[in-house]
Image (cartoon, rainbow, N blue to C red; front, side):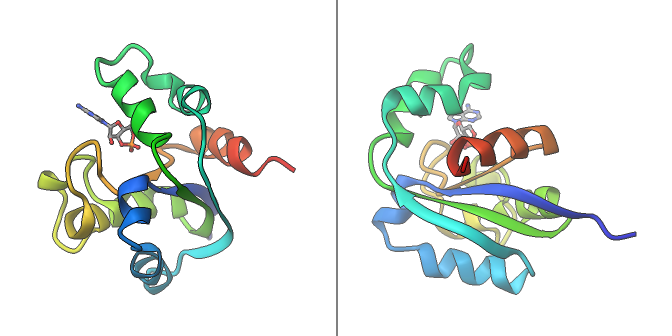
Length: 136
Ligand code: CMP
């Protein structure tokens, strides 16, 4: 049975700054993840705090919000078969040092903070996060 899903991808400031958009989107296309929408923008620290509110009790929350708002990002709506879990596999582990070979974070991530990309971790997060950036 097919299970087409939509998920949110963010190309974070470190990767936008290094012009990695095409390299990252080539990997997505090769893995049959379709880019339905995309836009480049810079968000405020307050918007980053709202986006990442599930992490508000974590020690790295403030740093995380400062970082996501520190420069332009590219947000994308991806679609495809089991897109949520497949995109997470393609990104690799949160810490680039632990990410599997040829995953996006293994190839391009700099550190656990500057890990180049974000992806929704569940269908409820995907719905919330897509709505956050692409509300009509
Ligand atoms: P992301 O998938 O965007 O979700 C939350 C982010 O917090 C994560 O990627 C990391 O970039 C960042 N982060 C910083 N420190 C940690 C940590 N110790 N554990 C998990 N995430 C961290």
